[in-house]
Length: 94
Image (cartoon, rainbow, N blue to C red; front, top):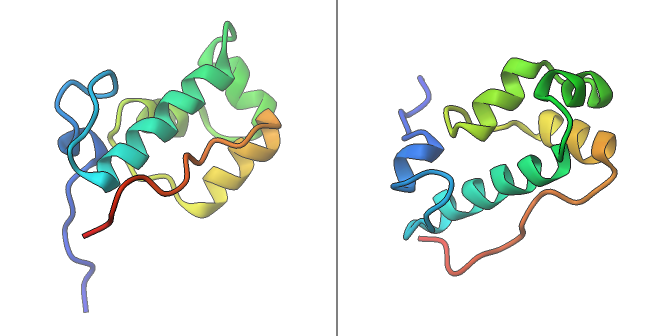
């Protein structure tokens, strides 16, 4: 059985990532991307990617809302940056 098609994170938040999403799942993804952006700070994305052991194109895709990060990517980013990036539960999930 094939995986059902789902929207990309940026499709759940008009004005990604600067406008709050009305979709709770989109909002979690948006806040995660903002947390990644904050963790990168003044470094280039390539430098940050090298520091945490994640390909720079993966980080770019997360920041642009073009992909859903998998658990391994989330763990590598959190461990590599040394901060919690997952925003936790937001609102109610439908």
